Image (tube, rainbow, N blue to C red):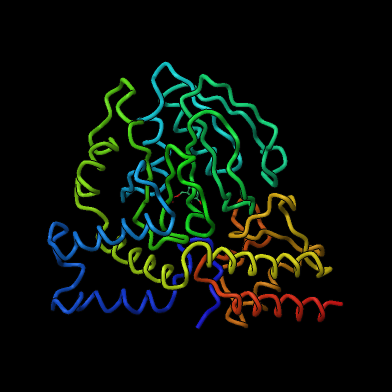
Length: 355
Ligand code: PMP
C-alpha cells in the first residue's frame, strides 16, 4: 500500500478500483468483459445514462446545460472551445495563470483574436491576477479554476459580464460550483473524476452554431450532444470507471461532503508548511489551491533526502512539476485525511532530525 499524492492521473478509491477490475472479466454478471461489449449495447447505454445523471446530480447541473463525454483530454478542448465559440473576426479574453492556461491561449489564437487580460507569468504564476478588466465585446472569457502546477486556485467565480468558459480539469467535483454561471466547463477526468481518456464537457444550450467556420464534424459539440456522446466509439472503460467513481462520491455525501473533507486535508497540510521551519509555501496565501499544495525547502539541497525519506514511508508522487521544482502534494478526492496525517508526520520527523 502506497500513499499516493500524484498530480494525475491521481488516486482513485480502492472500492472503485476493485469494482472496476471485476468488470474486466465479468461485467454485471453478463459473462462478458466491459472491454468486449458494444458501446451501442443496452448494457453500455445504461452506463452512459447513469454517468450523465450522476454528474447532473453531483454538480447540480441545470436542465439549461448539456453534459457530454469526449476523448482527447482537456488539450483537445483548448482547440474545440475557440473552434465552436470564437468567430473568425471576433475576440476572446483569456487569463494567463500558468502553462495550461497558456496552451489554451496559443490554441485559441489559431481561430481568432485573443486578449490576455491578466498574467502572473512574471511571478512564476504564484498568484492569480485579480484586477483584470474584460471588455463587453469578447465572445467569452476563459480561465483555469485550479492551476495544477503552481498550486493556485479560484475559490470563487470571477465576476464578469461576458460568457464564462472554464478549464476545471484539476478541481471539478472537489467543491461546489454554480454551473448556471458558465457557458462551458470542461475537464480531463484523470484527477477527481476517473481515469485518463475521458473528458467531461458541460455546455449551455443555445450557444452553439453561431460561429461561421468549417468545424470538422468530430470537433463539433452539436454532433456529440445530438448523439448523446455516441457520435463515435466513446472511451467505454474510462466512462465506466468514472461512473463507479461518481457512485462512490454520491455514497460519500456528494460534492458538499467531499468539499469539507478537502478543506480539512488542505488546512492540515498548509498548517504544517506554515509552522514547520524547514518548509515554505510557494503560492500566495489567498490564492492557495486545496487540490495541489506546492512548497519548497528553506534549506537548499535537502529535497532529494526528503523525497527518499518519504519514499521509505511509502509516500509517493510529491515531487514538484519539472518546470517548478520543489514539492507538490495533490489532495484529490480519494486522498484521505489519514494519508495527509502520514505525510505531515513525515515532514515533522524529518525536520526534527535536521534541527
Ligand atoms: N488543464 C489543466 C488544469 C491540467 O492540469 C491539465 C493536465 N494536467 C490539462 C489541462 C491538460 O490535460 P490533458 O492532459 O487531459 O490534455
